[in-house]
Image (cartoon, rainbow, N blue to C red; front, side):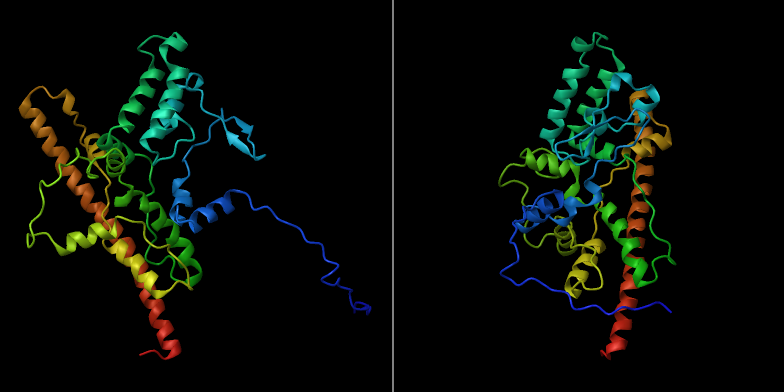
Amino acid sequence: MPLITRISSLDWPSDDELEETTIQCAGSSYLAYESRVLNKRTFYHNSSYHQTNNSDDDNEVTADNNDGGKAKKEYDLLSLSERKLNKLTYYQVLSRSLPLHASTEEIRKAYHRACLKYHPDKTGRGEEDSVFLLVKAAFDTLCDPMKRRSYDSTVDFDDSIPNVNEGNTVETFYDLYGPVFERNLRFASFNDPAKLLNTKEGGSGDGTTPKKKGKNKKKKGSGGGGNDNKKAKANNTPPPPFGDDNTPLSQVHAFYDFWTHFDSWRDFSLKAEKETDHNLESADSRDEKRWMKSEIDRKMKKMKKDEVARVGLLVERASKFFIYDLVCICIMFGCT
């Protein structure tokens, strides 16, 4: 048996003897909190979705930044092998720190810096240099709303959703389903590249040219009203956070209402073209081009249908657990 020695009570200084210290709030976490308090950002903007998906490679170089941490230096495209160049996204080609949903201005600035480094006048490698052509192709694609929408849909994305037997306890449900809903926000309507770019540049927000005032107004009582308007309204702003056991019921309902009316902007044109092995530019005649396009469109519709079913299945599996959990609570507290 261990020996227990009794000691006298500890002396605690009085309030007059305590030293007052001022703590300066700083750091990325505090800045994110302050942005949310000032209503400049939501939790969504600080989610892992907005972190640049940069793959590590053998030539990775780091440097100390002003905060004492380590920041990744830009890729030197001229020193990378063809295999590693092909692994880079168009965003990484322009700048290693360029986020997936960068603004048009950020893309232009990144392209300008890349040109200063890789332009043939700087490298002396000629106008047909593969690296410069890659940089130019990246800029041309990311600055065109519709091309960017198609390209963004091909960038690596995890389509998986939890199995029906996964996340069937409170302890695992939030950790399992929360990240899945978060990454699928990538294809939410308010993140549509075409809509974002056109809105910032004075467009209509649907990937088309600006509309004239007073034209194409819908008459009252015309078809396509309620459900379409509800779906559009539900997807124009980010949903409430996934939450936890302490989340108010109204917020939970708002969350599932958003996902029930979720309208994915995901564009399968490039993927369908690749899977059908049809290149419209290589068509020998107008009839062949028309036939290729019909095959691509058919494949796109099938992919879009599968996408809607995938998101619907995710919402169904998550909401089933929520309803089951709600019933258990009602039984526990004798709710009617």
